[in-house]
Length: 304
Image 1: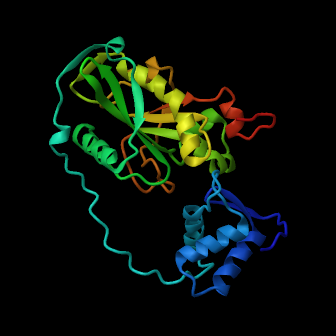
Image 2: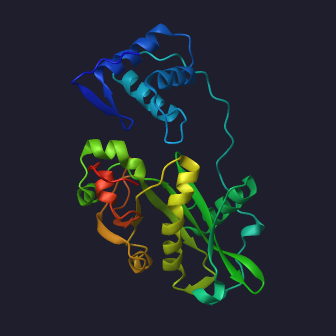
Image 3: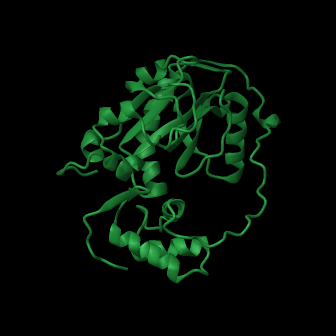
């Protein structure tokens, strides 16, 4: 593909494209009209050397690029085949997630506490059922990068599930957060993946262990960078979460030294175009690296 430098550049799918590179994309689509949508994405990623941090082609990002160019009338994509009928995403909790025996006491009574990944098909199904049954927002299918955990405590009877956590992709644009970081739009587009959102946090209603929530948040802050590095090839430098003050006070986040930086605008977490409304929530952040702002703003002399 062309290597000519151009002064005109656009940020699409978190990557800066020169006009020459976009010309190459348009030319590839024209040259290979019989390739499938996925084959086109692989071909373009190969030509642009467009990889994820762990060396895989950025197919999902390339699909976004192609869809955007098609919407703008710059390319005509091949006709897509009808996808196979998908299984229902509904979760129906079974008897295995019935309420457990009440558990009271302090953190020391259930120590050591661990965060265990829901790594098998069976554990993921169990995680989904618990979340659907006991979290006010229920279970929702995740897209992109995410990590599910069981909160596991030690009791005299053996290991016991105390709750669940979910970390996933960061919200696209948050005015208060972005100002707190010092982000410009180009910075955010290129390094948004270095922020991870604590999307769900559930302590089971029969678990009444004092200071458990803040203790678990501290554990998660220590564990998530290594787990994310192992799974996706890079480590986040900042955590975020949103607290609906109509339901919660955010006490456990403050106790775990998360910083309140403002309020959401009342849009969906992944909304890029302000189309979907939700209730405004308080934004809390937790740095995972002492130089997180310099890393997120790409200031020189800083490494992870």
